[in-house]
Each structure stands twice: as C-alpha cells, then as structure tokens.
Length: 160
Image 1 (cartoon, rainbow, N blue to C red):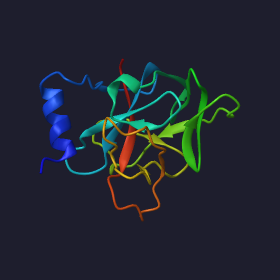
Image 2: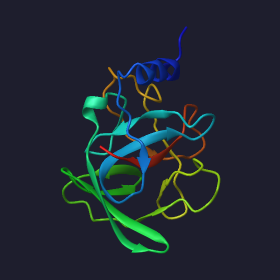
Image 3: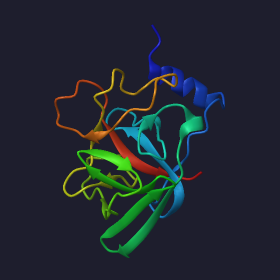
Image 4: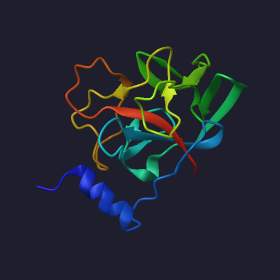
C-alpha cells in the first residue's frame, strides 16, 4: 500500500501540486501544514476559513501583518475574517483579531517560522484521516493534546 505522504511527494515532484515555499509571516501568503517530525513533509494548507485540506485548489490566502519585530508578533486574516485559536484554529467575521507569535524554541521545523499561540504551536486534527486526502472535506485543526494518534503539524507561511 502506498502512503499518502509518498503520493503527495510524487505529485509535488511531478508538478501536480504547487506547494508554496515557506517564507516569513508577513504580507500575503498561504498557511502550510508541515509534519512535525521526520522530513517535515508539506501536508497541505488551510482554507480561508482555517480548515486543513490537501486539495491545493482550496488553499486560502492570508494577510499577515507584523505588529513589531522583536519578538515577532503578527495578526492573520483571510477573506473570511480575522484568524484566532480558541480551542480550534478559525478565520471568520466576528472573530476578535488575535496576535500570534513565532515558535521560539528549536524543536520545530529547522529554519522555518512556525506559528505559536501563547506557549503552544503544535497542531492536530480529530478528523478521520490526518492528513486528509484531497477528496476529503477540509477538517478542523486544534492545538494538540498529545492524545491524537495521527500526524501533528506546524503552521507555516508560504508564498502564493
């Protein structure tokens, strides 16, 4: 049986999916989900509502605005509205803007800015498959409780 990660890697190598290169949380870009372990594979993106998908056509565009430079803090918004994490990651009209930071410790993806909320940053899903297949509906992400049995991800920023 071929794993989802193998299929995703083959599709990327063949030019079938256009994963964005990780960049800085500043300006307009996509929010990418990178596997927390192993080779830190790109496992998809977030929709404009903040849901996890591997269907590249559903990747949302996000505006990251720095509030200061040291330590780096920023807000995120999409066409759906401001983004926040209160139990789950979401972007919606009516959300209060939240100031995010960067993961300051070395146990994330080396050389890549990873989003954090307070003292936390590692995300997971309770969906039936993690990561979802491109044919699955997008699923919610939440801060990991370390009880999830599937892949954990860091949220990173990619160019569009």
